[in-house]
Image 1 (cartoon, rainbow, N blue to C red):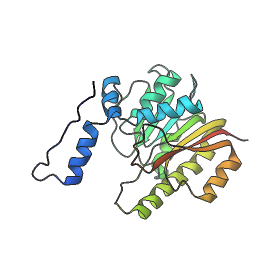
Image 2: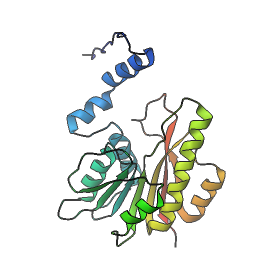
Image 3: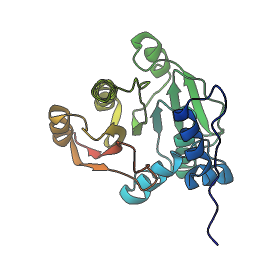
Amino acid sequence: MRELKVKVKTAKGRKISSTRWLARQLNDPYVKEAKQKGYRSRSAFKLIEIDNKFDVFKAGQKILDLGCSPGGWCQVAAERVNSSPSNVLVHGIDMKDCDPISGVNIQNLDFLNQESFDQFTQNIEEKFDVILSDMAPNAIGHKQTDNLKIIALVEAAIFFTLENLQVGGTFVAKVLDAGVGSEMQNLLKKRFKRVVNFKPNSSRASSSEKYLVAKQLKV
C-alpha cells in the first residue's frame, strides 16, 4: 500500500519556503527512520552508507567528529567502534550545544579558535584513526559565497587532519559539488592512498552536497 504524503498548510506568519521545508521533513523516509532507530538526524544514514561502502570504522578506533551537533554521526561512530562510557573512543566538538551521548566525549567549542581547541587536544594522548567533518557554515542563499565558506571550513579540517590523524587513517568531509578545489584535491591525493567523492543515496537529490573520503594516510 502506498504511503500517503502529509500536506502542510501555509500558516499565517510562516514563509512559503518554511512550509516547503516542513512538508519535506514530514515526508522524508530517512527522517522517519531516524526517529524509529533513535538517531538524532537523518545524516546518520549518510555516514552509515559511507562506512558500508568504504569500510571507514573498525572496533577500537579513536574517532573525532568536527561539527558534531546534533550528534547523529557520533551515534553511528560510537556503535561501529564499540565506544562506551568505560572506554570512550569517540570525541565530538561543535560551537552549537549537543546533548550527551553514551560513550562520546562532547565539547562545546569553536574548531577555528586555536586557544580553545588547544585546550581540548591537550587531553588527547594519541592521534585519531578517523576524523569526520560534517561542518557547514550558515547559508546565506548566495551559491558562490556559500560554496567558498564551506571550502574554507573543509580546508581548515584538512590541515588539522594532516597533523592529527594516525598513519593509515581515514578522513571524511562534507563538500559541495565544486569539491575542495584542485589544490586541496592534489594535496589529498599526495597524502592519502585513495581519495574519492561520493554522494550517498540518503542525500537529497536536490542537495549539492557530496562527501570526500580520503583513506590510508601516508607516512
